[in-house]
Length: 191
Image 1 (cartoon, rainbow, N blue to C red):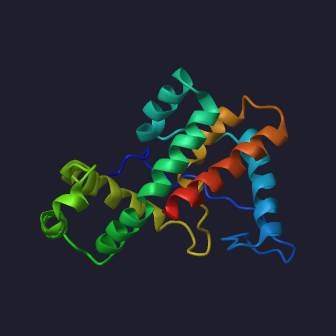
Image 2: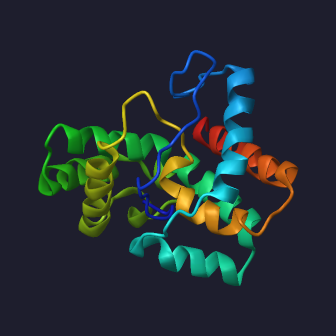
Image 3: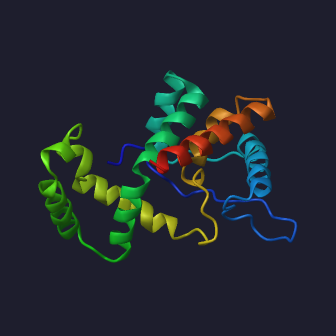
């Protein structure tokens, strides 16, 4: 952990709703969800979003294999599967827990697992390294620049998505990919 690409909060623009308010989290509202995805499909196509240094190798990797569909699927599933553990780590960071204390807690958790519970996992799958903890710490700090009511899962990956969406002229295909991103993300996060 984390197996998903680095998150960067450099672009968090959202559309306005019918009342002129920013369309933050849509929470199961199908109409607002579709409105957001249609807007985002065009926004990522039309808007130049610079790729941050720490995401450039990710873009190169997907340019070499799979393009937009691979990026969408890989990011959605890896982030979704790790969401619970990631949110727990973020909560600890926000509480001011040090790397040492966090690491000690993770090691106690790992050592407390039975053999059956460990089956299929390695310690590296469960216990963060210092570098991973520091990466998430930077991401947590960056995420504080975004208003709390805006929490769309695509935001930290917009620069990556925008690179590929600029090559897709068909709005319906961009919309389909974004819908796939959110479906995969929510499905994996629920497991």
